[in-house]
Image (cartoon, helix red, strand yellow):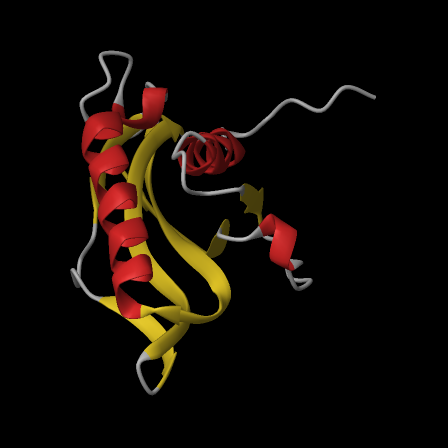
Length: 146
């Protein structure tokens, strides 16, 4: 059986590719929940916990895909390392947003928002183990398409 990717999966794949293209990120994955080995770090994982849809006229739907990019670094990594990785992800998103084929290179994507402009870090003292960037990606499909 051949699986046809949905627009949502195409967006997730584009985000994983965006992370993998950042030279300082060793491993980029879609929804990985098992721990990374030290050799795989720094790593980035894309999670999509929620999607909401609204009608956009009679024959189209707008979808708001909540996408979380979680960056993982080695134990006892200094704050400057994670801040640098976060800055590189934002720079890559800024470039991807201006892709002539559509944001992230996906024609159906209307916009990428970072509603809170807040990066959540899991931290112990001066050291950080991970950071999370929360995005909302809006895309449009035909009414019955995914």
